[in-house]
Length: 342
Image (cartoon, rainbow, N blue to C red; front, side, top):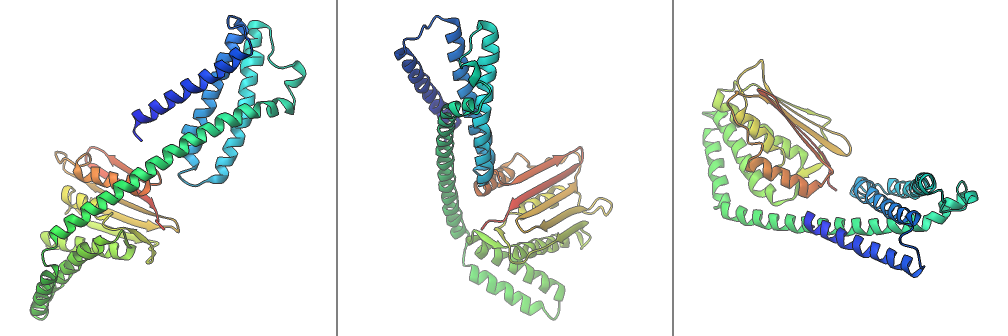
C-alpha cells in the first residue's frame, strides 16, 4: 500500500465516520449553535482521532510485526483508560472552565462508572484502528512476498544464464588442482578455494538459506584469494565469536560488506587493519566491518550495491533488522543485526 493510498483511505474513513456522528447528533435535535455543544463535539471527535492514531501508528507498529501479543493487549487496556482520562480533561475541566457546564453528572466523574461508560466509545475506535492496521499489514506483507518471489525468479533466470556448463568449469579446475598439487601446492590450494567459491555461488545461491558455517568459509576463501594480490600482506582481522554451526542465514548476504571494505579500504596498513567481526546469540546474528580509506575514495553507500542490499534486508526482515552505517572523515563502519529465520 502506497502512502497516497493509505492517506486516501484514512481521509475517506474520517469523512464517513464524522458524518455518521453528526447525523446521529442531528437526530437528537441538538442546538448546533450552542457553544458548549460545539466545544463538546469538536473535542470528542479530536479525542477519537488521537486514540485511533496512538494505536495505529505506535502500539500496533511496535507489537504486531514482532508478534508481541501480550504488549498489544496491555496497550489496548491503556488506551481505554487514556480515553476516559483525556475526555475528563477536555470536557469536565477545560470546557467546564469555559462554559460552566458538565457533560456528566458530578457524582459520576470520579467513579468506575465513568471509565465503564466511555469504554464503548474507546473500544469502538480502537477496533477501527486495529482493522485498519491489519489491512495495511496484510497488504504490505503480501506485496513484499510477491516482490520476493519475483526477485527470486529473476535471480534464478540470471543464474541460469550465467551457468555456462559449470560442471566443465569445475572439472577443469579440479584437473589444474591435481596437476599442480605436487609441484606448486600453494597455487593448487588457491585453485581449490576458487573452485569451492564458484561451486558455492552456483549451487548454494539456489537456496534461500545456507548454514552460517558455509558462509563463513566462503568469506575466508574470498579473503585468502584477495590477499594473493598483496603477496599475503593483507592487513585484515576476521573474528568469529559464539559461532553456531547449525544456524542458517540468507545466502551471500554478508560478502557484500566484506567486498566493499576490501575494494575501497586501506588494505596493507597494519596499524589500521580492516576489522570484521561476527557473533551470534540464540536468536540473532551480529556482523560488523570497519576500515580506513583514502580521503578521495567514494563509497557506494547510495549506489546499486547498497540499494540492493537494503532492499533485500527490508524484504526479508521488514523492521526486524538493523543496518547502521557510520562514515567519518577517513573511517567507515557497518553494523548489521538480523534475527535467525525459521
